[in-house]
Length: 338
Image (cartoon, rainbow, N blue to C red; front, side, top):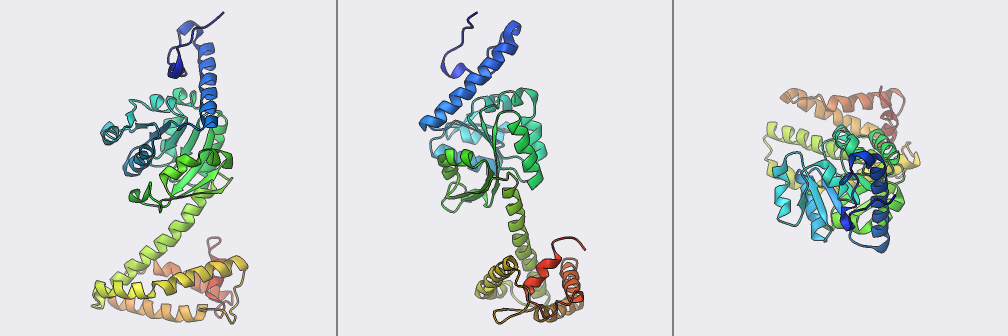
């Protein structure tokens, strides 16, 4: 029995299934769509892309893709947020199902993995993702990324997980940084797509959880700097120091801090925790200065909830006989909770 198939782009799973033959027809159409995607990838044509989630970051991703000529379909729970993209050439899909059915690559940028699961694990959506590449740029945990990769593999879809290390204004620029992990072949085969998103998009490992792990590590660095800045502001304000002066002095001393961080990472990587002729600063020097900060904060009534955490790490290291060690020795006491 021959089944008439609509021509060209109408070969979409489930879009024309008559009830008496729909299970068979749906399977055939799904496989045809998968073969078509593979053909397009091999001949180097522009990928058709769906961007699911068009908040500020998702919209920036879509704009970057459109600027490079990628056929882009967008979907957002609140349709109004996607409408400005139509003026740039995007197609607004009325449903997630229609968005993903139109795409070879599905980029997801929503609030968390629970939101991703709620969108993609809908039975109808899950049935049409075979042969696609899912690129999840949603924040989450390394284990969440691994579970998502396993779920996609079970449905015949490739999976890459990414962490965006930039604000929306950097997307599509040379300085746009995104770290991506998962199947390296999927990353390499779609290099042009990732180049459209930023000039510094890097594949960081086969483990799908690696990008989010690296994201968490870099966020820890960032928050350390930001909370440090909040403490500096509080000290300056209570001591009558103009914040403009604080800013100027930070500009002058920032290279020193950058050097200390780079040295700490280098020494921790090498396991060089004892003080030596190359030590830039020991725990004892830092701990003495830290006591002065605590005295000032107590005298001025500045909140100590964050710095008391620093104090507990100092104390654990000192109790273990590390007072004279290099500051990098403190890294031995953060690997697990006290």
